[in-house]
Length: 249
Length: 72
Image (cartoon, rainbow over all chains, first blue to last red; front, side, top):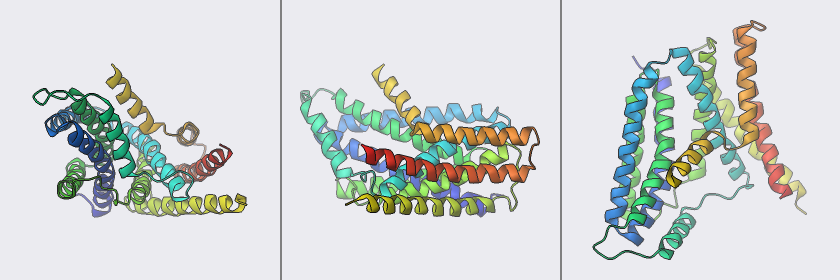
């Protein structure tokens, strides 16, 4: 029986992280489709999704071969590196040290790159457009695959986590198909902050389990770690903001 | 080849965004593993060291990055 305290953070981490990644991939695919033709953009996206499925299919059984405590230690450490990396960047953005990611600017930059390259004839397949879409979906998708495997493997949560990721894809593609422009109003940094908090909490929990530490309260410790990372992140942003203000003449 | 290099670079950046914090996180995990393996401290204390160490790394890495950004 899957406990709600484990499933809820896993599914929400997969959903929120996928939301961020799919929005980023969507911006580039939209630029490729609008400027180079939808046939190539869709083909590139489909090819990348096929590669991602192959990676999951190949990795799934391979992970089953690893003893559970080694798997927990490996995934826990990777989650710490990945989750704290996201949290680190999100805190710097929240403090105003690093500029927020702007989907409209990303779309304009990608569009400028694609416009510079010569477009093929109408009948010819646009390899450049296809390759750009393929690369964007593959690179952003790899992060989604890692998060789904990391929060789902070893606890029987692969399917719920995958469904969380799939729901994010449906939401973004649905809204994207209606508005047909970059989804610039998604609060990307807030989402990254939340995902960084959840993944870091999972990272500490799993790493500890991998090292043979029996956490008191079992899965409830994930919520405790999450609250602590949230407070630490908000506190760090506050410290940095204050010291920046103090230095500004 | 270029695409493979970009994918490899993307994977690397996924886990090594900031070299200092990556090194510090790995150091915290290694120290915790050592303390637990050699039974220097009880398991729960090792867990507390892991947790507090990670929080400390987060705050320190943010403050350091902010300072570096300001110097630039």
